[in-house]
Image 1 (cartoon, rainbow over the protein chains, first blue to last red):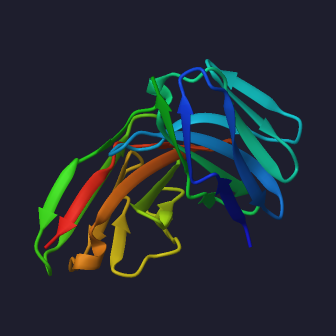
Image 2: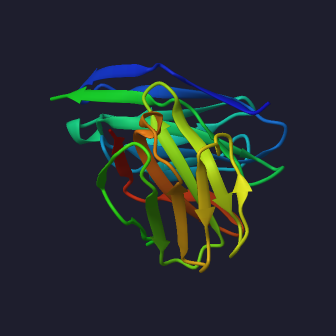
Length: 110
Length: 112
């Protein structure tokens, strides 16, 4: 059964303190791994799709990487506006369903 | 940019009422999805549609139905609202060949 586990559940950082969020996944065949950002009371905002192990993508202070079993979202020198919940999700090659993790709530203090 | 809109941001209904939530997308995407999101349970798929008039059950379809008469619109229907359907409802779309989903702003539904 496809599964996505994110850690930690919550992360508190000082502004400028770099860190990483982890997403461990189990799928029979990976079609894509996705990262989303969700602000309170809003819908998730798409950030990245990663398709194969070794792939990396960057956007501003965020960098996503992928191995065969996990993905990391690295946040470099975060700012308070990076505070949000970050969701990881996977879709396997078998169909349309996307499995979401529970998310990591990130708090960045000025 | 993909734009996905939902008919209401907030909705308050009484137990037993019929509730319609509508989602409209402007990107000509084939696939549309309805999720609910609850604290501690994450995003759960209710129904999805990969073409007009086609629908597939997700993980939690009980108490819900859907309608897709036009490509750009996907409606979620609560036939007889119950308090355990109080939740945040999210619509999403994706295109053929691009597996990532794009979400609407969400509808926060309160059933009293």
